[in-house]
Image 1 (cartoon, rainbow, N blue to C red):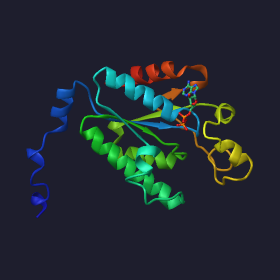
Image 2 (tube, rainbow, N blue to C red; image 1 turned 90 degrees about the vertical axis):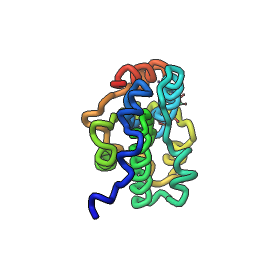
Image 3 (spheres, rainbow, N blue to C red; image 1 turned 45 degrees about the vertical axis):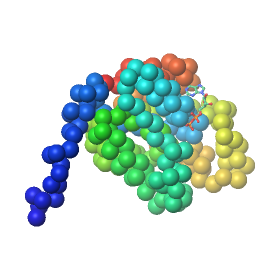
Image 4 (cartoon, rainbow, N blue to C red; image 1 turned 180 degrees about the vertical axis):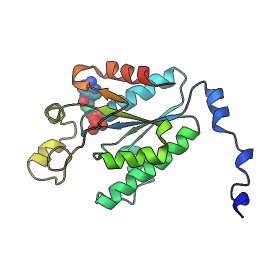
Length: 194
Ligand code: ADP
């Protein structure tokens, strides 16, 4: 029976109550950009600063998701889609629990990001374009992946032989080549409607 589907829902602690207790809203900050653009570095800096200010913040990135929840997924198109879908669903649960979730994923296509926004809900979705020129990312080459991709040892690498579609109207456009990590993190925090 339809009205028996969620029999305990109204007994659970409501999102509004959690947000009132925390003193801030929940939401999903989705950092998109090329490999090496600074997504993980900025997400970590923001998480630390928010934590120190008493905000319930949580990073979700390839490291804490690929190993566990998505450990059974590879890098085929289907698996990448499933990876993103699961991350979006987890981020939504965290946001409803009152957290500011900092998701750091290349998420190269507009369609992929639109699907995330759809799952999370547009009111809770804050897209941050970690806007760093390819040349700068390649020069940083944090994990040596650009060198490998240029040498043809790594196929379908975003920015080299696989496209990155820049966001058209991101919530925030972070030009990291003109900022320190600290400045980028502060700019992101100031933009949030906490
Ligand atoms: P991604 O998660 O996007 O692949 P990373 O955060 O792993 O990128 O790597 C970005 C690298 O760029 C780090 O070594 C970081 O210290 C460096 N970096 C230099 N300036 C900045 C900046 N303004 N913002 C973010 N990262 C920066």
